[in-house]
Image 1: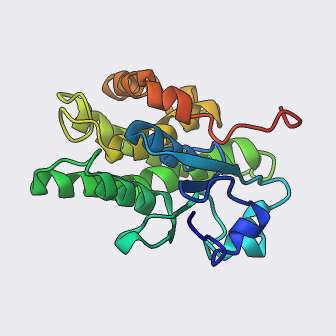
Image 2 (image 1 turned 180 degrees about the vertical axis):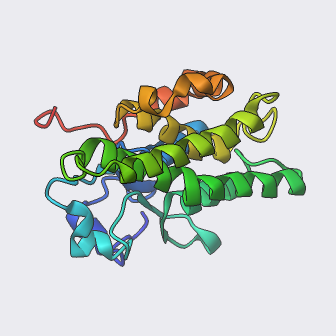
Length: 239
């Protein structure tokens, strides 16, 4: 049995099975990227729910795995050279899992790096911009009630980014063509989240992006998406 005692996070969230991937997350647009990928890949994993309310992500145990104090993070007990490895940043985790298994990334080198470009497009653009839109539109609306600029700034940037995706998906089933990849997994939870979490569908104008909406439906129709989108689940006492 793998010894994970070198990872302090396992003292607060003990591993029931230390021989499988340990996932520390919450069902947010960033968090579910990893659970969906794990489901798609069929890799066994043990999810641990990191609650924002008590600031679990800021505890010394969690920060020992991710110094940035953000979900998700993982421990793979069978990392490079067969040794345990801890990873953070959802895009990096997606790429690691894809390379580990040789799945969810194209075999063709050019297509592989095109996929990486779109993962970075999500990490540097779609996630931060839709996240800021949601913050000012939903969570900080009262604070900026007399100043519409923040919400409009990020709303317009969200629309621009969706326009980039609309052009890319116009004649494609998936982001990089005919193959479902980590680029799709990185992007679709954020497009979904801006609607589900922030209620921004009408404000952003999702109806103006039919190719993106059809793609989102295809992503969500996948069994791995339907399962992974709600992981880690709440404990019975929390539900």
